[in-house]
Each structure stands twice: as structure tokens, then as C-alpha cells.
Amino acid sequence: MAVFAVQYTYTDDAEKVQAVRPEHREYLQELHAAGTLLLAGPLGGTPGGLLIVRAGSEEEALAAVDGDPFVRDGVVIDRSAREWTVSIGELPGA
Image (tube, rainbow, N blue to C red; front, top):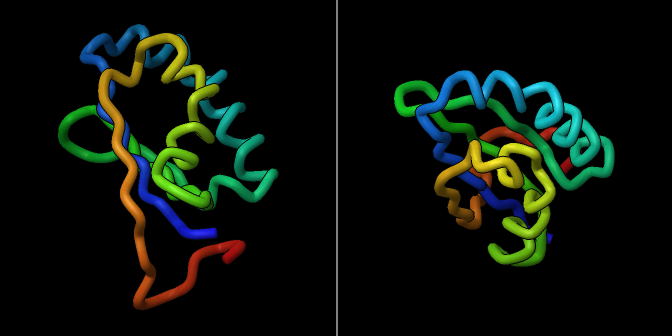
């Protein structure tokens, strides 16, 4: 399994983001407990987030987060996945 950086871009609708955030975080906690999600958090600047996911391909990385309430409810308006190789430091659970 490889590691992928999945970047989310959120809608500008801050109320929608706030309303869905608790369910989003619960879903990500489940992915983390399953060992699929290694790290996650919001990005500064343009509203969005970064998820570090263990998967076999970019497609699998995106599929792993398809069930995210942020994706399902339209909070995420754009997303991408790129393979990421850690060259310094260690990832938790890796």
C-alpha cells in the first residue's frame, strides 16, 4: 500500500461546513481506526483540508473518502489525490 495526500477544497458556505463537520469528523475517526486514514486536518487560506490516506492507487484513495459526509453533502467542491513519499520523519501507523 502506498500513501496518498488527498486535498479537499470546500464550498464558501461556512454554515454548511459547520453543520456537517461533526458527522465528517466521526467518519474520519472511523477511517483512522481502520488504518486507512493516517492524518487529517484543515488547510489555511482557501477553505479546505488535507487527508493522508493509505491506499493502492489514487482512485482507491479517493474511493476511501467517497463516504465522507463532506463529499456526500457537497461541502467538498473539488478534490485530488497524489501519491506521497515520506522522505524525512515517520507517519503514525506506517
